Length: 396
Image 1 (cartoon, rainbow, N blue to C red):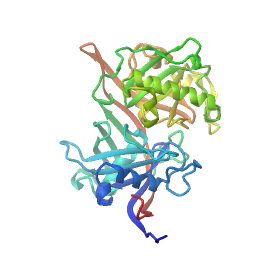
Image 2: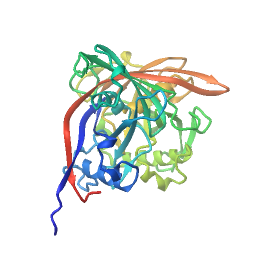
Image 3: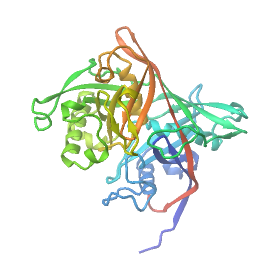
Image 4: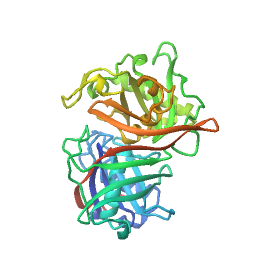
């Protein structure tokens, strides 16, 4: 067998929110991977270490979870009034598949810093001290995101005292605004209803249907009441991820919900659209112990939310799902809003497996349709390593 040399590609390994991913500048990728297609997908799969039948991604940069099997491509934008384009690829762990169907809200917090460090933002827009406003075009869902990046002595400030549940160490706060966060070109509520009876097989629930709020905001998300599934909303990862029957149930709900939302034509197509939609279950506030051992008091939160990503319960909360939560909470009558006590609200603090998170959203009705101008939350981000990734030259 002929020896194939490895090639090296400039890359940065970053944490954004409660996720990690490998970041690339578009112009640094090999020519064949600078455009969408099989070559780009094959390259990113090899970088991350997928597909891995062992589920470990040992031979790549992935961390064998949905939160750490991620890639980002950033480039100068051609969009008016924007600075950079941001393209997100969710890499399957055990399948040869990169899902481009949605955004990663957590890694969004790192895009502005990466863009500044990579020279992709006009230097005149970066203050010596203060906040740099980076205007990001999210290319997957064609939406605007505004990142507020702290700058100290002309450099991105990454350290600070902002604490984010789900992240061990404090860092600098990055405020992220998701402008007009309804995902895609369709209605925020694709079925036309705030709450639907979602038909599912009888082996999911004996009645054959579940109450569901299906929303396109941040990322397409299906919200279910925890109690209808026999849960409280205080569950931690092992309670769900160690239960194969539960995981199969949630995947079935996701597939049927995806059809109802018009994202796929048949439930069999759900396997090729793993990143979207998300499934989450909500409950009214209860005391619980987070995964870090931190006590979360019911009077410190408005509701409980647990969400699944790539077939597993997330250890904290996906940033895009947080946008969906904040948006749905702001609209009276959704399951999220009702779990939070109902009524009008512009912000909500919810409990997740790692602790709590606050997200704000402003909703109103226009011509009978609900719209949200923007959703806002705070995250943090940090460069973990920079240099080059290496992959065999025949990988793509």
